[in-house]
Length: 204
Image 1 (cartoon, rainbow, N blue to C red):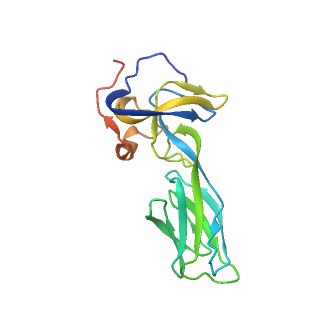
Image 2: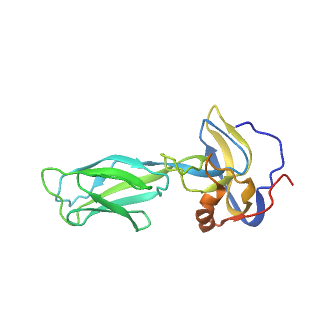
């Protein structure tokens, strides 16, 4: 992306907060780019009191993964996948690949069968680096979390930057991945007090 010197009144007002960030290498981003932090997941840790001796593998995070602990809780014939917020994002059968837009994995049976109450924990954390939000992200950067405050060229290496975390924004000046629209993220931005305002747009 070629940066150009134009006035882009992305921030319109509201209750404004901002935080320093790091833009991941390989990106040349313009002010107004909607950002998401890259996340990573640890290996699954079996509960100390588990009866079953199977394992969890093929762990992959999806675009909407949340930071915190995911818990896999055996219900007798499979596992409920519980998010850090305490809701379920699906049911994982043993020896069958499980996939969701938050986390994917495969629970393999061992010699001793799983019983109700057996549990695994998978910790998801932020890496501290951000990239342009995308619904197709495979590194957890699919949730709108910040709006870039200044043009930032991180083509060659990670680059320090800063992003707004709340405020009212001109939807016409918000930038997301090709083939997507700012409207795709309107609801989740509103939950974070990042309000999209529809205007005529333009350089004014």
